[in-house]
Amino acid sequence: MLAALPAAGLVPGSNAVAAPGRRAGVVAGPRPQASLLGQEIRRLPTSRRVVALTFNAAWDESGLAAVLEELRRRKAPATFFPTGRYAEARPAAVRAMAEAGHGLGNHSYSHPYFDGLSTRERAREVRRADTAIRTASGVEPLPFFRFPYSSTTEDSVADVNELGYAAIEFTDDTNGYLGPDGGMTVDLVVRRAIGSLGPGAVLQMHVGSSAGDGVVLDAQALPRIIDAVVEEGYTVVDLREFLAAS
Image (cartoon, rainbow, N blue to C red; front, side, top):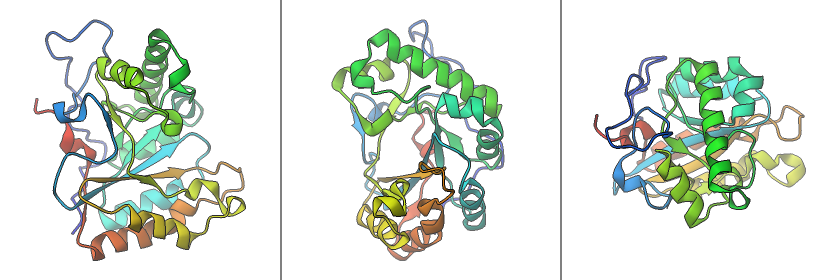
């Protein structure tokens, strides 16, 4: 059974303010549960048979309409992680994600390797992305950060935690973004998704075409992935369930 999707455009915690005692400069808004802090998260802290569907967005809008339609049809929640530059270049796409009722995470502004940045540079990347995403979408972004290239260090995780974000990485990536030229097929995408299943699994997919050819294998595979999730007795979970109680 799939989790119910929130009403379109309604993001829990959208009117939240920074909690008392948080340091100046921390991005205001909803807070992640404490169990998500202090480490990179590759499985959600739960024993329930739930799976989170997540999509990065840094290229173009290819596949987005198909993904949103399938999620709507199946009443399945997802979290999208656009970069700030994507939000500035394609605000209608980011707004469509939010208007469909899905959560918006933060994937940095310019998609650099964070291990080579200073604390100040990391903060600038996160804050610029936050501004761009909230401007494009008109909603409060979630306090979930996904590192570019999934390149994390203990210091970089601590830095984004200090800004109020949990480091939400993934159990597995479908590798659909590699496309046919990278040796991927829809069958291989589905196989990798099924292989990641387990309590609290976080599945990473992508919208947009890295090759610019309009081919988005993750969008093509999504119906079969959701079918497999259901057949294996899992529920698609909304990451907003892992926000701290207000």
